[in-house]
Length: 170
Image 1 (spheres, one colour):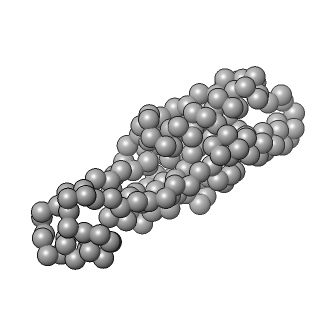
Image 2: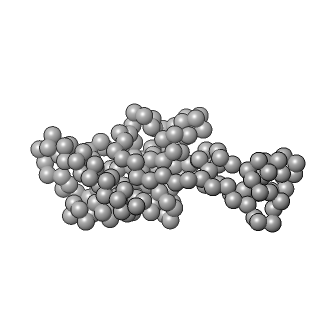
Image 3: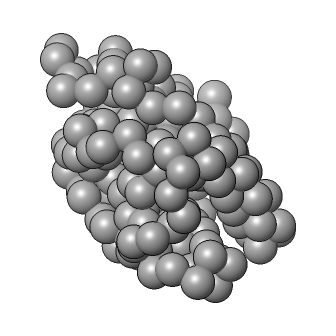
C-alpha cells in the first residue's frame, strides 16, 4: 500500500515539476531535491518521506534528501519549507497538525498553511487508537471517560505533542 501511495505521489510530483521546468526552459532536476519532514527521524511522517525520497531518487536519477526539521508541533519544519524558494526543489510533508490544527493552536505562526503551500498528493492516513492497560477497569471509551472523571490525577497519557491530532483526541 505504501509503495502505491509513494508511486502516485511521485507521478504527480514529477508532472508538476516537469511543468515548472518547461516553463523555466531548464532541465529538471539539475540539482538535489529536498523533502522537509517537520518531525524527528523514526516516526511515520519520516518513514513516508524517506520512502518517497528513495523512489524519487531512483525515478529521477537525482539525489533526494530528507531533512528532518523537528520541533514546536511541526512549525519549525513548516516555516523552513515556506521560506524556501518556490522552484520545485523543496517539497514539504505537511500533516494534520502543521496544516490543520497549528493555526488554531498557536497564537502566531511564521507561515500560512493555505497560502505558503500548494498541495500535491495525499501520502498517507493513519487511524487514531485509544488503548489502556488491560488491568484498568474500563471496557469502552465512555468507561474510560467516566473513570478519569471519577479519578482525577490518577492516570497518565502520552501524545505526540501539544496541538497534534493525538493530543487533541486525548
